[in-house]
Image (cartoon, rainbow, N blue to C red; front, side, top):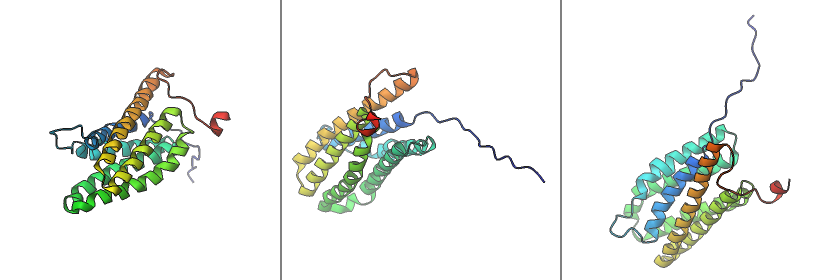
Length: 203
């Protein structure tokens, strides 16, 4: 009889995928928010669409899968969900929006309301990661709330304000991504991200 080797196999951890996920989220959010803010002028306003699939969608989803590999349940849940958000929003824009007419805004409002509910508890748990991640989720919460209110009301001015807040969200996410890249490269803090808050910080 052949003996079975029951010793655990140790695998090397993957590199931190969070900077990639944050960068993908930031760029796609920036493009859509710039359109909502009315900054794109003579452009189509749909520059975000391809990147909703390729960057904000696929790359963020991959970052989420790698976070599962790193046993980071928060990062895995956040990146995978928002990767799915961008892919889903892109599919809605291609398959539903062209025939939705005046009801399109209400569809967007319901989508954003649903994700705001998800984002609310992720905002609470992000306080246990660090300050920079908490600020990303805080500004994202504000963006989603303002945008779903504006879309339910059919008020272009409120949607425009949501675009401004969305640009701020993208900048916060870019900063957090940049900090993750350089801090990971140096092996020690270079750009500050702050500490966890609440019970974990006290512990």
